[in-house]
Amino acid sequence: MLLTPDELFDHLMSYQELISYRNAYGKLVGPPPPRGSWRKVVHSRPLLDKARQSGSKVVNGLRIQLDALIVTQADREPSDGHFNANGYDRARWRAAFGAWTLCQHP
Image (cartoon, rainbow, N blue to C red):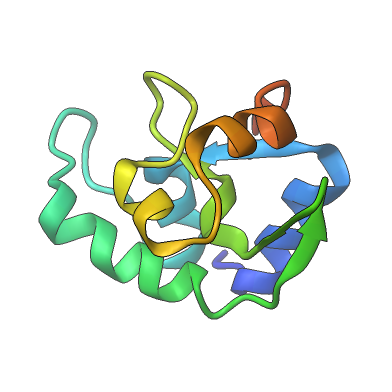
């Protein structure tokens, strides 16, 4: 079952969790591509377009939308493009969200 961007955002906020690109894709867009076949150019655009439809919230001094909580599996941080498009840097994001865990809910 797909979630709206605000439903996923609210869930992550209530549990103070981050979510991987692949898992977020499955929650917002549809079945994720098979493991190992993620293509940033092909799969990230529809996911991030959908995530940017969420409302915004101020968390630890940062005004964010859902895309701030979508992270790479390897380093548990948003991609460089996220920081280029928002009014804060990686250090401020880490201070606000660095201790949050990855979402483990189905």
